[in-house]
Length: 339
Ligand SMILES: Cc1ncc(COP(=O)(O)O)c(C=O)c1O
Image 1 (spheres, rainbow, N blue to C red):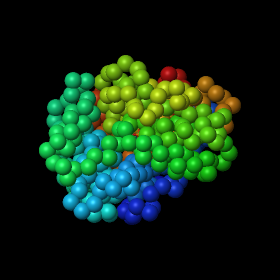
Image 2 (spheres, protein in one colour):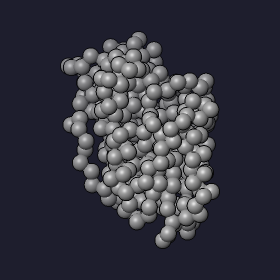
Image 3 (spheres, rainbow, N blue to C red):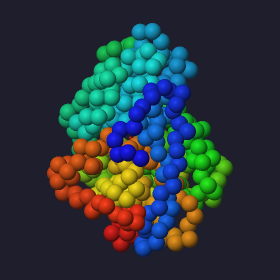
């Protein structure tokens, strides 16, 4: 698979049915297979296509959208890019409330699809931007009655689409019943939906919620975070730690290292949240030498992180060192280095 941007056909009927790609990784001195569910093959390039489509459909079903109505949403990036094209394809104007961490790539996608971008510049009292973005959305709603807010953080349509589509796809495409499925969390919609489905039909399959250290989405102490797309400054309204068999908090440096090792060894480029998921899966495999197939839900691709996770200047700025490239026997996910 090339490192560059996959060609996109922006047709909402092509959302979902993403490939499950097996790759072989070196974990604790042994070659192990991991299946990557590559959400970058959605037409908008991320798992958030599914969420965006479900949110817009929900507003339509409730009769909240129509001529003269405009969608407004808070987003750190991927949902904004996804909503931009879903709204564009349906003819609804869209206002995206973003922050300084939103990638240039996602901003370009939004503006290319006629979205109006509102950027908050000041962090909130928690040091992040989530609350600042939500305050801006509420201010906009108060001043303009034509605006409609899907509210990805609380709308049950978010986890529902992952319960009804993403979860079933994982089991349909896996070779056997997976031993464990690893899912990154931000709003927690993907994790909650996938976990609910697997609990119903494959309770023996372990669900591992993956967050970054410093995020409080699934509990844990707040702290500085460098990655986008994963983590939140407040607990998820959809997923609680008790909904998962395990919760793993991965340091962002470890997530970045996993991204580099995977790309160097296999040519597959994934985003930072997928690096966290891979790092958590590698630790799991090191602890469970007899585990069967494990599935990593990879929310997006490297294409929107070339100037951050894969960019020399950003890595230097954050004191991160990429793993050496050119691994010939597959990427080494050494448990000692990941511990
Ligand atoms: C790259 C990436 N990974 C993971 C997630 C987590 O998705 P969710 O909001 O469903 O928890 C997101 C959400 O924006 C994302 O953009």
